[in-house]
Image (cartoon, rainbow, N blue to C red; front, side, top):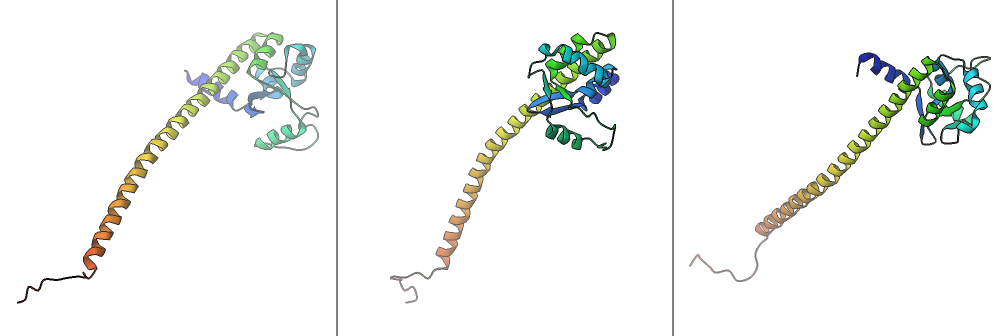
Length: 180
């Protein structure tokens, strides 16, 4: 992968969030990437609303939008700083559908990059899950081995402790007199 593509993927991935268990990109970020106004993007989506079922697009609640805004480093309040309308959040399939209604060469090229970024994130997440599973398996395996080692050490220490106690005890019973 070239350095330019890595930068693009990094830039686009910074716009992808998790919401309701899905990876999403917000309408104003998508509009920025496509080089159009958010208002025009939303108009196109509303004109083609049947193309956007719930698993393609989500309209955020006020609470979700506020939560996501608090995650941004540049949280600003004030008139004109943010839209008075709640944003749309598009899943990977929703982005593909948007690219079919925003028909410009720039939008098509950017859609390809966005799809690549979603795929990259999915692969990265899967590799992390696989790595986590392997670590957990190793922990279970080695915890069992260490448990056995600790039990053996405890047994040996207990046995050694009992033997030293036996030597210190004064013996009772018949003793042959060796001093005659």
